[in-house]
Every structure is written in C-alpha cells, then in structure tokens.
Amino acid sequence: QDAGDGCVLITSVDIRGCAARETGSMAVVGADGAMVGYMSNGCVDRDIQLQALEAARKGTRQVLRYGEGASSFDLKLPCGGSLELLLDPAPDPDRLRAARDTLIARTSVVMSFDVPERDLPVTFRYDPKTRLVLAGRGAVFRATAHVAHSAGFELVLCSPEDEDLEALEALPREATHVLTTPNAAPRFDLDPHCGVLTLFHDHDWEPALLTAALETPASYIGSLGSATTHAARCDSLSAMGVAEDQIARLRGPIG
Image (cartoon, rainbow, N blue to C red; front, side, top):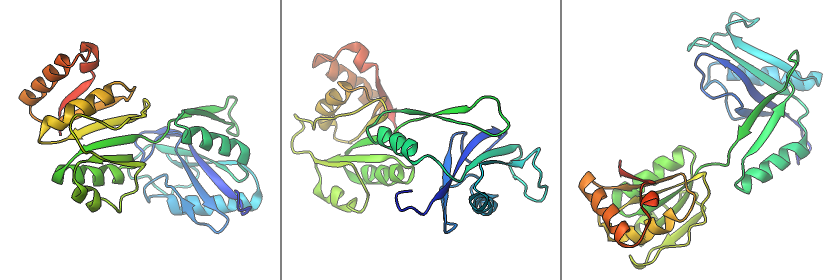
C-alpha cells in the first residue's frame, strides 16, 4: 500500500468442514500477481490469485466460494466442506496500518468486514504473534529454537553457553540474553501472548528464571525434567517464598 501499487486483501469469512487455515485468516495479492500468505495449502490458491487480479481489474469487492455450494465444479477441496473468501481490491490503508501498529504494540485488535449480500458484518479478533522465551543449553535447546521458529513464534533466547547461541545465530529473535550466574535472571517484559520454557538438564539455572517468569502474565511457563524433578522444583520455589497459586501455573514435566 505504501508503495502505491495497490493490492487485493483476501480474508477467509466462512469455513464449513476442514480447512488449512481458520476464519479471519488473510492473504494478499499484489498488482504483479504475487501472493503473500495462503488459504488452501495449494489446492485452490492459484485460482485465488487469478480471481484476485480480476477483482483488482474490476475494482469491486466480491465473495469467492470453493467446495460445497460453489459455482465452479472443477475446483475441488480434497478435505471436503467449503471455503468462502472476501476479496477487497481497495482495502483502507489507514485501517490496516492502525491494526498493524496495535499488534506490534502487543495488543489484540478486532476488525470487522462488510461482506456483500450479508446483512451483518463479520468480525474477527487478531492477537499479537506468540513470543516464546527459551532458556537452556545443549541439543534440546537448539532443536526447540528451530522448531519454534518454523512454527512462527517470535523468539527470545537465553543461555549460559556462547556455543549454543552462536549455533542459533541465523535464527531471527527479539532478544538474546547471555546467562552468567544461576542466581540472577534477565528482566522479562512479557504479556499474556508469551510463553517461557526452561530447557536445562542442570536445574540449578531454573529457580531465578522461573521466579522472574512467574512475576509476568505469560500464559505458558514450562520446564523440562522428570516428574520427580518437577516436584523438587516446586518445593524449591516454595522455599524461596513463591506463592502456591503462582507455582501452580508452572507446567511440568514438558517435552
């Protein structure tokens, strides 16, 4: 939009049966036909691109339907059901920018869409991208970082091992913390859209990190280790003065 080239915003407004993505999911087709995002994991995405370019040429918003009840019988959804999409060749750039800025500020946003031939708009809530703090060392720490990145999480990496952090240097992350002592933890500025995992086999690093994490509203906090280790971990936190209701937030064993 900022480049002035225009685009078609595609929003999933109704799904019956199975689908690759949920309602409210978006994709964009640019003026050059390039598509960012997907709707069907390849089944009908090429046709969506072509239909979006046609919508841009006409300059009119339209609803596109695939599967059950669709006007075209030669494009099937292998998983069955139906997919209904809203194609908007002139989305409001100010509205989109405001939503984007709200999400970057780590706050949820609600957006409504007027769908042709529907009396009421459809409304979806969009949450900030999940941010995952990983604290650990060794192969499990490295592997989890790669899996989390592939799954689309934002990463914060904490480790006492320079070698582990250097091995993950190519992964995008929000922050890196080099841990220097088990008795101190970085300041975690986390919100409910965040999670924290401790991935140590030497559990001396955990108490300070978990205490700091439990002081935040992070929605998921978990630690690697056996059931026996987890019980000892909870006892240690209790002895440090951490409240029982806070300790109850800790998931374990994980992995």
